[in-house]
Each structure stands twice: as C-alpha cells, then as structure tokens.
Length: 278
Image 1 (cartoon, rainbow, N blue to C red):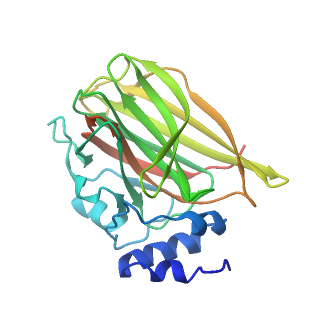
Image 2: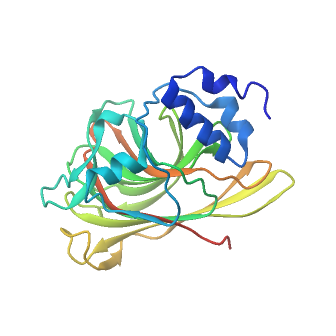
C-alpha cells in the first residue's frame, strides 16, 4: 500500500471519503492517483447505486441521473430534464458559462472502473457563443498526475473540431490531439459521438493506450433516436504512451468544456461497454 493512503480520504468529508476510497480500490495503478489527487474545484454529489457494464442511460427519469452518477465538477450546473433545444427529448443537461480561462464540467457513472471501453452517446450543443463542447470522460483519474482522458465535440463556428485532452480533478485540461470538423457541427442538432479506448499492452514500464473518436449525423437532426447518417469529418485515431506499471482502469462519465462561452449542452442515450484490446 502506498504510504499515506489512509490519510488522503481522512482529509475530506464523509461523501468525499467514500468516493476516494472507491476510486483507490478500483484503480489498477494507484500511486499516480494518490500522489496527485487534488480536491481543488472538486464538488461531489454522491450517487446511491453502483453501475455495472454494459450500461445505457437515456435520462427518461431524473432518478437515472441521481441514482447512478456522481458529479465531480460544477455539480450545480448539471441536471436531468428535457433537451435544451426545446424538443422535449429526455437528456442530461449541462449549463453555465465561463470566461477566457475556460472551465470544465464533469459527472461520473458510479461504480465501474474499466480499462478497455467503448462509450457512445447522442449530444446536442444549444447556444452559439465562442468555443464550447461536450463529450466523454474515461480512465478517470488513473493516469500519471491523477488525470483522465476527455474526448469533446467542440463547436466554434467554422472551426469545429473533435478534441482529445487530459483532465484532472480540478478541471485543468491539457490538449493531446484534435481533428478538424470544419463547420460540421450545427447548434440545436443531435450528433452521435463514440469513444473507444484500448490498451494493447506494456513494455518496460511504458504502456500503450489507443483512442478512437467518431462523430455521426442523425437522419433527423432534431431526433436523437433517429438513424445514423454520414460521419462528420475523419476518425480521430491517436496512439498514446504513458509511464505506467501496467494497464490502468478508471471511471467513465460525461464532460463538457467551454472558453469565453456558455456551455449549454444536452446528452442522451449514453452507453458504455467493455471491449477486447486489439
């Protein structure tokens, strides 16, 4: 056991201690998490249940969110309801604004810690206002420096893009890769986002993680339950390497990011399943 492990949870209140212990118990590679887990900016709303893979949530009832998710960043701006475009589709809504320094919103599915995963969801960005986006959180927070991976559809006029970044528990992000989507993301339209993470193996303390992300239109842009149309832009396919003792597992969830903007995004049909590494 890493020295000081018991001391980390004891510095927080009850709900935060429980959350930290679950993260620590589920992490395949604990030292980076314990060495750098920061409570700055971390706001927890504890979920009641523990979710097993595979899972799917369409947020048709508020209890799907309240019982199965734990908010970690800007919890008061995250809630279940109907979509922000006003079409009455059940969704998880992330609202709020931020200045030039940017801000991150995040909520995690309670329970599952997974190494190789496929996440998919239908997402909508409501308001046009500078750069903002929504997507997935994965391997949280099991990477060196206590970080996770985030994949976000970013809407910004003619410079829309798919962004891969690391994010820590304070919401600080570090860009890793981007894929241009041109002007392919319209406001108040639903898109199908996928994120696949595979960990093929490690060699002499260096582990490979491959991330693939894709965006698809819906045949009816106003209906997230309609069939899938054409892919928006190319696939983002990024091989990463980290100094790790072995493959890592971490939590999954939904994340949003904005800079000098209103984030105002909706998510539905959020599903996750384990995959076999290539």
